[in-house]
Amino acid sequence: MTIIDGKEVSAALKKEIAAEVEKIKAAGGKIPYLVAILVGDDGASQTYVGHKEKMCAEVGFRSTVLRLPAETTEEQLLKEVDRLNNDDDVDGFIVQLPLPKHIDEQKIIEAIDPRKDVDGFHPENAGRMVTGLPAFLPATPDGILALLRYYKIETAGKHCVVIGRSNIVGRPMANLLSQKGWDCTVTMCHSRTKDLAKVVASGDIVIAALGKAEFVTADMVKPGAVVIDVGITRVPSDKTKSGWKLLGDVKYDEVAPKCSYITPVPGGVGPMTIISLMQNTLKAGKGEIYPKK
Ligand code: NAP
Image 1 (cartoon, rainbow, N blue to C red):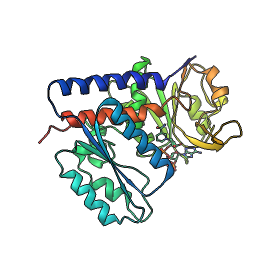
Image 2 (spheres, rainbow, N blue to C red; image 1 turned 135 degrees about the horizontal axis):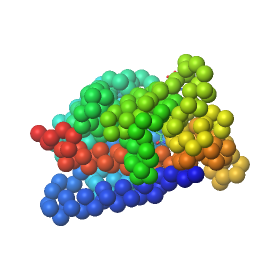
Image 3 (cartoon, rainbow, N blue to C red; image 1 turned 120 degrees about the horizontal axis):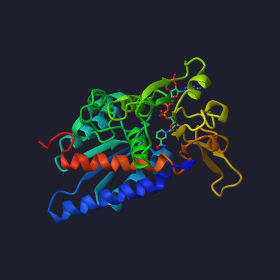
């Protein structure tokens, strides 16, 4: 059994991005510039945006965090989005989710210029992805593909079971793995799936993205399967200084011995998500997905 080390892979890819930025600098080119909009004071969102800001500095990007109060109206946020869409200096930007309840998230996502949509959530990028056109891919599925690539895990002809059908993880993951080049036969499960345990047990590759701590148990996993655990659930713990710990969607201790490969939580998929965002920003800066105007 091999433990997939997301920290190692993300560190290797981070070096590659930093080297590219050095090359751009040396050639006198424009340094990629990422802006993050953060509305309100949700603790987890502040942490995520903080990590993104730090990573930008580490790879050599320019970045700005626009911190807006929780009372920001939808109209005001749309104005900010419009301003960033039209600011030629900004290569890509993200609006950190979730947004306060009074703002329609979908409306905001659709207002972002797809050329700058480095989260890959705009329907145009989703549509381009589904049809196999160059697109900004959503960071978590893209990060999982990078893990599979790094560990040279065979996917062609394998049965991949994805648990979860959200627009940011399960659905794009299932679609990408079914595409030419990855060539999996994919089953996408959700809360209405019948005989879920039986379906999961037929998977050569299992991607658990349902957000239910330790849901996938050893009896649900085929011997030798590749198990990718996307879930993150914070649970109280008297063994940590912070008073809480993170659990994945997979009961790691009992599932790991049955697997050929498995991602731990933390340290598996988590570190990859932010790297994919950096890669998308680099691509936006270089005009790789959409040529610069
Ligand atoms: P989400 O939007 O809540 O979607 C969860 C999906 O799981 C839904 O499609 C839901 O089905 C399905 N589901 C829920 N309970 C189920 C059950 N008992 N059996 C089968 N399917 C079930 O969550 P998400 O945004 O995709 O995130 C999933 C997990 O990944 C969360 O723990 C999140 O924190 C984590 N995550 C981690 C990263 C990372 O960087 N590591 C990034 C993003 C998300 P229905 O559609 O039928 O409701």
